[in-house]
Amino acid sequence: MPPPDTPTPAEKDDRWREAVLTAGLAVFDWDVAARRIWRSPEMLAAWDYPEGPNDAVDGAKAVLHPDDYPLFQARMTEIEAGSLERATLEIRMRSREGAWRWIRWRARVVARGENGRPARVVGTVNDIDELWKGRDLARESQMRLQGIVDSAMDAIISVDDAQRITLFNRAAERIFGYEPLEVLGQPLEMLIPARFHREHHGHVEAFGRTGVSSRPMMAQRIVTAVRKGGEEFPIDASISQNEIRGHRFYTVILRDVSLRERTRRELAQAREDLRELSVASRTAREQENSRISRELHDELGQNLTSLKMDLAWLEANTAPEQGRIRQTLAGMRTVLDSTVAATRRISADLRPLMLDDLGLAAALEWLAEETSRRHGFTVDLAVDEASANLSEPLASQAYRIVQESLTNAGRHAAAGKVRVMLRTIGTEVHLDIEDDGRGLAPEDLRKKGSFGLVGIRERVYTLAGSVEIRGAPGHGTVIHVRLPIPARREGDA
Ligand SMILES: Nc1ncnc2c1ncn2[C@@H]1O[C@H](COP(=O)(O)OP(=O)(O)OP(=O)(O)O)[C@@H](O)[C@H]1O
Ligand SMILES: [Mg+2]
Image (cartoon, rainbow, N blue to C red; front, side):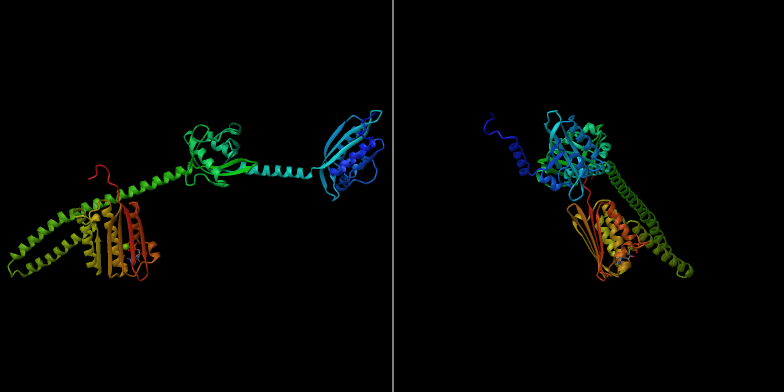
């Protein structure tokens, strides 16, 4: 006798159906011998399965995708024949809305007849369309991402939270010289010179703590990486971080900037060479000028002076009645005087010997006097003590800048007054020249065929200084120059 709570087969069947209805499952129950099929309401609701009793296999033909039906039919026939115990198929079925949807169809023989043939087959139908679509989408976006990552010109490297490499794109292979198999799963540190390991670790951890999603790596600074062969090279890198299910991972995008860095260094070197060359050539010219100027002054000047003395003697010793001779001698004296003056002027223009003999302040004073006499404006000159005896090449260059500025004030400004101020402030010389003339216009700074202001800028540039030239119409012109004073080297006088 069965225990009192053992259900009868009919009760069992009822409970099973109740369970199916309660769970809301899409279930079918197929009575093979009777060729009848029971379908749960969910199955009827979701699928366009013909209603009423019908043959499971034939009935399904109306709702299954024609491409999938043969497979379904084959499996069902095997089950029906008793050669297959259970089957799982992923096939397309038409929904009530008329669209094909992927389903997972499962069937299992649950009872056999006396002849051993299946009597009852039970199964479920699960809609896996969303799942598949999601999987397709994920695969598609994965492929698209892969395409982007692989075609990128920059190296792209991802690491997990233990800083092991999880992604290494083609550009990274090219730049670092590793095959992906050599680096995947390896610590990122294999791409960084050993002496930077500790620093690098700290940076990444600090970045992790910030929670910022991306930023350039050590902004403004070139980071160093190391190739497979051990060669170090500079890179520009930016890092981003993401968190997926509690795991943080970092992606670094980097670029080999060796070439750029080399070009930058070469350019800077070329500029520096050019500057030095320019300083050297100006110094050489000043020295040459100085030599010629001294020659004119000493040699020619001396000779002219002795000629003048001889002439005076001749004049004194010529009888008053020698009218013609005296007239000629007077004419000679006039020519001689103007020759002496011209010699002085040419000599001073070449290079004021005062600059070498008495220093910058004295030379500027003479220049101020000369120009105000020549152009008819007053020059207010102020030179502080520290700047009075500036060393070369600063003294010559400052002198030339003032000379050009005063000449300009005379030629273009119609100025009444020019102020010249030379001061030493810290490790710089500040030179200001201000006139109260008509004021230069911005376009004057780029006047074709004018080289005065260009020359000032060039002199300043070769001394690594800075210059500002400003004019206000009707309110004069200001030239402000700053020149660094070179540090005195050991052994300098
Ligand atoms: N102090 C000034 N006031 C007004 N205009 C000025 C002054 N200095 C220069 N300029 C204007 O700027 C122009 C350029 O000056 P710059 O000294 O470069 O050349 P320049 O004096 O014309 O010729 P040079 O090559 O002989 O010096 C001048 O032609 C003039 O128009
Ligand atoms: Mg000029």
